[in-house]
Length: 423
Image (cartoon, rainbow, N blue to C red; front, side):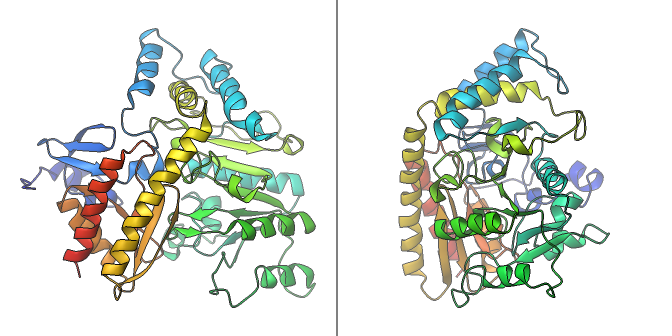
């Protein structure tokens, strides 16, 4: 693909140095539809990034767009704080009917500020309030957000260092397979909990991702998650599942913890819950945990009504028959896995491991700098992919759930070529 130099001057002179994704994709995007983005010169890019998991149904999904346009054109409420609105009522009723009731989940729904990190902050605050304890246990290579409470339970040293203040009341424990199976699950954790001399303050809660997205696509086994839930029950700790990137069908089922057969005490949801890339977040928790005082956690934009409208449309369109959506996602995931097997066999000396579930996959190389070179070459070939892992050592594949088999084949062949050409 021939690319003329885009005019990036205003971004480079006026926008902060903190910008990141745009450095890996040096062009100016203008429009997007489905699984493709187009820059201002008309070049098309296949998108295997999906708004970092916020666009499970693709860009400008026509059904969701129609619902949004209709709502705005009739002057539907845009900003509503936590006022009762018709849009919020429709979402709550649909979410209950299509998501909670079919799974026999008893959760109350809280709307924190409309970001993932705010959902995590509210979950941590609630756990501490319920248990009257400060400590939270998280896991190695976890990522839960960039505000201070979320950073305290995030593993990445670079991101933690940006806080500029001590990050307290968070204790990391080994994630599944951290010791390559040489140490029994939770041996260290439970020993510390039971030893009065360990120095570990009794935690209020444990927070976990079933698949660590930013941490390198580390997949927790169902039996590990079940053992964690049992440990929390034995030790009087709440279990928080952070489903911000892996929820809304990314791993197959609507919630990523369903496969393990567990019911967490608290669940955080954001990113793809609006379906359209509009800011929205939920904190879900068991009714007996609903000890909030009115206004004890709030936010000006917690009532983003256009997001309620697209979220309702997404649920009605894709989750009225959730089994069909789940089946499709798993089939597409198998298609990716087969391609990664082929890439691994072709580059046996270079690829360390491939891993994933549903439509989130990672390809890790022995050479830690290789993933970023693969992503750069893929961009030149018209594919958007990012890297993850503590040192950016994993190529991360995160296509929309609505991606077609043909688009998947096209993108996967670009990945294979990029791997080949960066050897």
